[in-house]
Length: 300
Image (cartoon, rainbow, N blue to C red; front, side, top):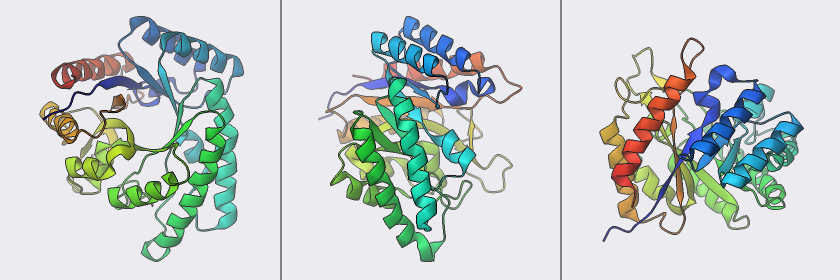
């Protein structure tokens, strides 16, 4: 029998409001609007540099009971950090930089931080990269635990576009399961586009990742290698990408049938990017309408 569960609508702000990157006042104002509107139950943000604005975000999200996830992707990308680096000094430096930012996440009211790993070092070095990633995540989890923060890891694609070390679901599951034996505050941020670009069947990948998954990004991608849009570009939902409304319903219905997430609410967001020449508010409205329709059909 299908078990009842509840998907919590969440907004991935750094992608939807990408043209406003660097304008932290805008993001504070927008979070206040989101809290007042009351549709979203969670927000995903980038690092906030201004201490006073972090305090404002914490106050707003605490009062409105919004779940906050802070992504470290920009920090990792801008500084070239590699948590799965084979070189030990490079790995340690990456860990130290992430740990420095955990306090900021806490000040902004985050109960989760989210990470991506480094480039794929090639088949011969993957075993070492995996061992080093386990060490990195373990150290980060220890620090995050002191703040009551969960550490989420998002695998990307290994061969198609981003070419990161952590990509295939089976590899991700094995590494995170190893970390979780000693650090319960590790989790999996699942992205549909990354699974598809890894040539995985999404429903099967979700079943494999199982209860490690804490949140889901419904992200679209063009899967034809000869298409100019091929890869992980956070394109709008629907054609020419694989993620249509019907496909999204199928994915969520499969999740419900598996009964993997009944014990806890499950955060879900639409990952779509607003480019510089596009209207971010229009992007958000379209994503919200898609999510409202989807959750009306699949929640409960």
